[in-house]
Length: 234
Image (tube, rainbow, N blue to C red):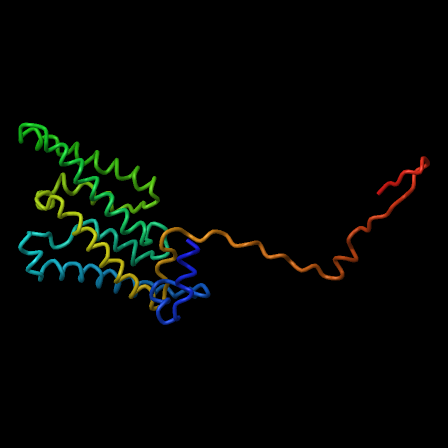
């Protein structure tokens, strides 16, 4: 969105840099630096999420998983290819949240089917339906993030996640936010992240090429001739 870009441009360079704004495109890094920053980003991002859930008594009391497996795949995108459209904040946060919401809603609907044994026998169907719906919703909202497909099926296939019930949603939001914040720090040291926040910038106006004097002289001149009936021809 142009409005977001304009707001970032108004910030001091030391602040806007860490939000992905660049006056000029960043230079291409040699492969070994790309590998280094990808490794550091993934390590720091995944470690931070796990430390929060492992050592917080608040989350321990609620039996929150150490980490949701789908964020391992998100790390590949956010830290490995930070310039990819599927890695941008709208896809990362929106894709995971919408998929988690759909996964919980669909699985809860299946849990209403009596008896309990019937629900257990149909959890495979709930998982498939959750991910399928999530794909379409992400396409419609322009939040496609492939790892979020795994987030959608977790309530149906993972009992620990299913026991979280609606509390699964803030866990997903927190995990996505941590992954995003680490990406803003690590990826903006020598790379750029995000490339856009909500939508890619549209093409700018096409610059007019100056016409040289020689080109003007070579252009065919318009001449007027008179026909026999007195009319003018160009």
